Amino acid sequence: MDVRKILIILIVVICIFALGYGVYYQVFKSNEPDISTKNNVGVTTDTDTIEFDEIFDNKINYQGYNVNNQIKIDQTKDLVYTNYTKTEIFEEKYDIKANIPIININSEKIANINKEINSIFQEKVSSIEANKISSVVAPTIYTVDYTAYLNENILSIVIRSTLKEGNNAQRLIIMAYTYNLSTNELIPLTNMLTIKGKEAQTVQQEIRKEIRQSISQTDNLAALGYTVYERDMTNAMYDVENSNSYLLGPNGTIYIIYAYGNTSYTSEKDIVVIK
Image 1: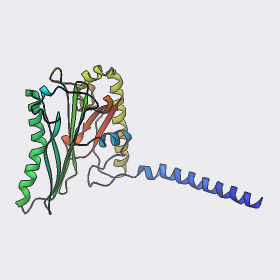
Image 2 (image 1 turned 45 degrees about the horizontal axis):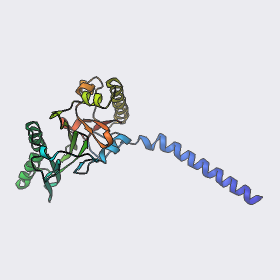
Image 3 (image 1 turned 90 degrees about the horizontal axis):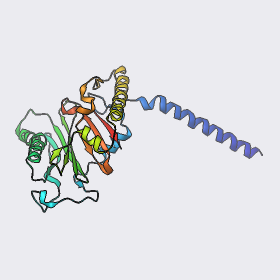
Image 4 (image 1 turned 90 degrees about the vertical axis):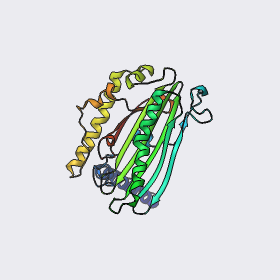
């Protein structure tokens, strides 16, 4: 009987300790900021962001759909493939790891998209390499990767780069294109929502919910004295009709992307997932 009482007491003590630790972690540890960068402290990574970050595999995912090879420029290659690869470390100057895609479609509109991809991502590699002979340039870390998905007759591709130049805050740049192979047109988000049978008003509510959550998190960090990227809920960029940076990804999931590093020195982004 004494042994049973002792065991019961031990179990109760362990349960009380576990409960206490859980409360402590929720109240204190979960509110600790990410201080991995000097400026623009990041907010807590949520499930949607983790899901989005894990799909970059530097290839096209056909998902069982077939494509007419006649639309390709090079019929021996994939609809999207890595056109430029660079992995090089030049001591105290730069660290580059870039996989830059090209869309293999015989179309003037696609040709213009490919030019834009080259201008944004590949020309940056060239400019970084050109600084290797300089004695004053701060070390640079630059990465580029991408992913692409085919959903029936719709091709969607997203390219992501991170740039860290000297003491500047890390910058995250994301470009996305969703293209109708049948009509040879880029598809605005509002049209995609119609195709997928989604109500624009419902999606708008999801966008605002996500941004409000991010604002709440950054407000908490700012109150602790950290420099954060400030979002403006009233900005028209969050309106559905203006939110045309998105990926139609695995199994038709829509990832609406707000990459603030496209225009500012920050690695902050918001991802709204519509399934």
